[in-house]
Image 1 (cartoon, protein in one colour):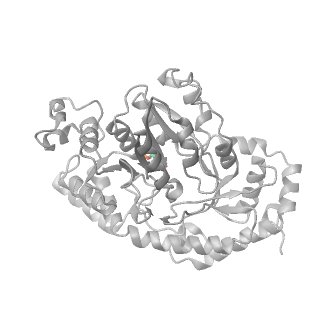
Image 2 (cartoon, protein in one colour):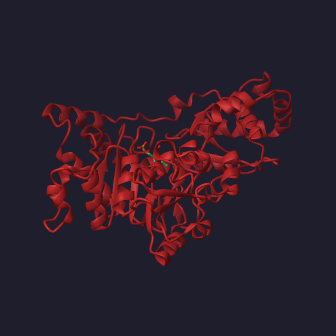
Image 3 (tube, protein in one colour):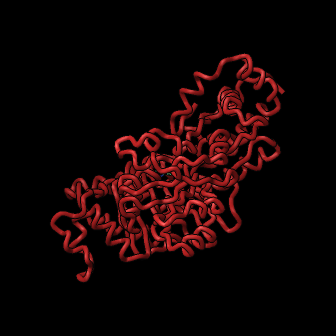
Length: 433
Ligand SMILES: Cc1ncc(COP(=O)(O)O)c(C=O)c1O
């Protein structure tokens, strides 16, 4: 096998994935509808918003849908909707994007960090119960990278302790668990339509629920304009003048883009899934890279390809050296910063939210399995969104080449100081090499 590109050999990947495997973010239909909205002057409020909320709720299978200006505000609405009051605790994984956690403190709740299962990268149901206290109000689960969490035991624990379940589905549009769409299983589901997601709208989000009270509370929190539309017996009519403190209205242009993308969502997800499985099968013989495990009965949507590098020592520099060698071969790969929130200054030092969080020993509990998952996870490949067999084949070849030269990669690591490069990447949530 030829010399590693890291050491001056020829690189394996000759195809530009941006040209070969990426679809336009904005469709022709999206552009047309945005133009129509501009011509009609519907640049702040539009009937398209309620129509799309209904359409997306039907897609997920819930009674209610409420569009928001981003996924973060959908999550804050959800935290408020399920009744988290100041001082209430919400159990949440540390292995996630910060926006699964900060909405809890924005509502003056206390995040209590919990382990993930290193195989699925999702919240570990076995670790939830030890964090339940008299102040626990909810569990926030994250279907991370598009992989559904193990919802049956989670719902069972929630029921036993009288807790609400919020599903952060920001990566998981169209994913399902035992025949039910994610977002429809817990009390409230939240999706992001941010531009890099698989239903991109620029910025935007949606909250879905089957619970009338949750919907009304969420609507009242961030949408004073919707309060008159609530049923006449709603207790939230009294806030018509002021709303309840936030303004989370989505831009109608974003809705136009999301609505157009929804036409294509399932077909695109299935093609990505076929491509992803062929990539994973192609490298299944490499013992030290491990894809996320999809649970029996779960249907994952492969929004991202995050793998774990299984080094013998658990040293993060090994993961980085491996990535560096792949990157030199032309692999679009990246470092993952998930799994560090329980050590983030915002929570440990209280940041702008005061130090009630920092003083709670449960918040700073060690999470060894999460930390190990964090040290070893990496972004293995870009989305394969088109029929791109040749590109996938090149990726498989590159992974084999680097793995067959792994001793040279480790020798390179030992004779070069990679600590500065690693430090530059490791503070970030997601960092492409
Ligand atoms: C897991 C997760 N939760 C929440 C969010 C927040 O979504 P938004 O960026 O639309 O506010 C994101 C966005 O990247 C995310 O990845």
